[in-house]
Figure: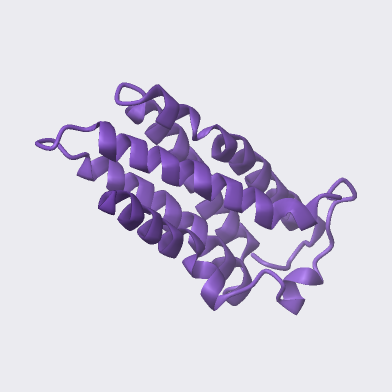
Length: 157
């Protein structure tokens, strides 16, 4: 039970830490031209909360299904790396005004999600399937950032 709370707390700090320092509500970011099809932007924070819940449950399942002798520290490190990359998106985009940098960290996090989902599958199929929301949204988010780059040439490179 203690491990569950510890994983949840660390996951929340890593996953949402970037939002404590930077907000995508920044006037510069809000002033960027957006694609016409982006009618669901108000849902994005809720999407990320859902993704965080799924990845945190996945990490807990992997931790609990591992034997006490062979705790999956490398896998936990990968979960942490995904959370840190996810959290880095906002500061990179807003503070450095780099949509390109955001696209790189978002794409890298998504790639790591696919790799980690494959690696945890032998431990827990459920933990692997819990990556599906991130795997889908990661592609959409990375594509959306690429579209923002195209719609705002010379801005955010």
